[in-house]
Image 1: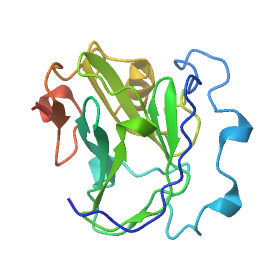
Image 2 (image 1 turned 90 degrees about the horizontal axis):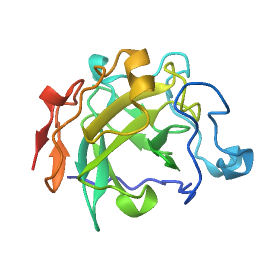
Image 3 (image 1 turned 45 degrees about the horizontal axis):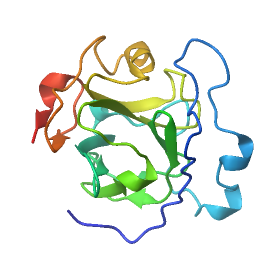
Image 4 (image 1 turned 180 degrees about the horizontal axis):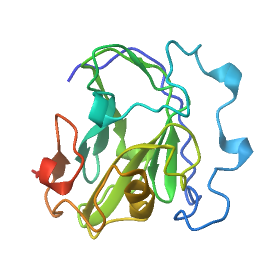
Length: 190
C-alpha cells in the first residue's frame, strides 16, 4: 500500500476511556487530550461534522485490521476526491487516536496497533468518528466488530452502519474488506 507523506497527530491515552457506550455520560475525551487547533494543518475540503463521509457514498472506510504486535488499522479513501482526516478519530475502546492530514482518492494509511492497543484477534471493534463524540450515532463514520465484539456496537447500530449483533469471525491474523464493509459478510479473515 502506498503511504502518504502527511502528518498524523498522535493522541493515544493509555488507560483512558473513549467515552461511554452511548447510554449517557460524557462521550468526549478530556479537553487537554485533544490536539490543539494550531497543531493541525489547515483543513482542505473537510466534510462538515453534520455530514460525515461514509462507506455507502465511497468515502473514508476502515478496510483492514491486522492483530497483534506489529498490527495496524488501515483507513482507505474509497471516494473519487481527496478526503480530509482533520478532526477525525479512531476508537478502540478504551483507546482513541486523533487523525489529521488528507488522503487522496484510492489512498490508504495505516495506524499502528501501538497507537490504539490492544488489537487482539479474539474480539474487539474499531470505530471511525468525524469528531470526539464517541457515543453519538451522528459522529460515527465507519465501524467493524470481530470475535466477541466490543463496546461501540450500539452506536454503530444507532447510526445504521452495522447490523445489531453482527461480528466478523475472529481468530486469524487479520480481517479485511478492501471495498469497505457494512456487515460481517463483507469482511474476510486472514
